Amino acid sequence: MSANLKAYNIFDLRELALKRVPRGVFEFMDRGTEDEVSLRNNRAVFDRMRFRTRTFVDVSKRNQDTTIFGVRHKMPLVIAPTGTAGLLWYEGELALARAARAAGIPFTLATGSMTAMERVADEAGGELWFQLYLWPDRSFSHELVERAKAAGYKALFVTVDGVSAGNREYNIRNGFTIPFTFSTRNVVDMVTHPRWLLGVMLRYLVTTGMPMYANYPAAAKAKLTAGPMGRSSLRTDAINWGDLDALRKIWPHKLIVKGILDPQDAATAVDHGAEGICVSNHGGRNLDGVVSPIEVLPEIVDAVGKRATVFADSGFRRGTDVVKALALGAHAVMIGRSTLYGVAAGGEAGAARALEIYREEISRVLALLGCCGIADLGPQYLQFADPHLRPATLPRPGPRPVAGTKAVA
Ligand SMILES: Cc1cc2nc3c(=O)[nH]c(=O)nc-3n(C[C@H](O)[C@H](O)[C@H](O)COP(=O)(O)O)c2cc1C
Image (tube, protein in one colour):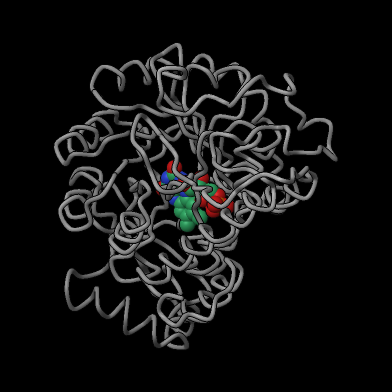
């Protein structure tokens, strides 16, 4: 077990993170929005699906290799973009990217990271993807695209579910802002978490200064005033499909739209040149009461699964969750908080532990299901306590298409 972390599952890592980082930072990472209905449903939805197992299957040579966009990876997982990961651990984005590389999976760097994209590319390497927000001044966003291209990022995730920032009241209550502003409440919070204060905040202060969004172009930084985290004034509520066309023109590699929950939107995005769809409700952090990605995944897979790579995220904490989404037709799963808990608990070793937990859990689930590999998963392994989740076409003939092969282009 890495780093002597006493963590047997992702929830244990969450407990370790809770002890280590100030409450304000922890809540920013952990919580949802408003009454957290979607946050809870993202977990509850997995309980409404049961496995159907097969037996007398030789699963001794099972593996989790997953081909995404023609590249073979070691697990069906991708680390999702999470802004301000660098607040959980000193240069937390580097820690996450290194852990992803060691585990043989892609890492997605968020626009709002505290480590510049060029440094992550130089110092961590591996299969790197970049996440983009569309800002009111599109030239800021396009500047980031050019930098991501130059730095060697292989895929661009444009996030479209945050056109207005979620209503995260706890951030206001906790007085948590970026750039940082000090209040009695958050100073007490920091002082009572000395490992974080010394290992993260003071380390930044004596090296690069107050942690900031490192990727923001200078002009965007100048416009930034301290606001509650998650309420960046730079998000835009005026986007249209022409924005996707514009990105398609300037981005030569894989283009994925993140935050899709409607099959028609998924189909339109693919018509406009997207090669991937990330079915996501932003981990329950933006619109409270919105459906869980799992509840719409079958429809979206039916709409675009043969011509695009379908990712799913939001609420995944167990290998069983991952296998359920793959059996519903997702080609890979993106994880946000799971590796954040790890990095907050123990930096790169903590993130590595989170991935190791998933690897062990997924392997065990495959064995117990009687399934040899990711490409063999399908709805025949599921029983739907909730008929709504039942895919339209059941059972699907033969093995499902593998992401990145010609079948899904
Ligand atoms: C602390 C935090 C910051 C996030 N920042 C971003 C971001 O900057 N861009 C983005 O597209 N998604 C962001 N997300 C959403 C994740 O990419 C992902 O959709 C979500 O975390 C998945 O749910 P999970 O945390 O339950 O795994 C963030 C999530 C968290 C928890």
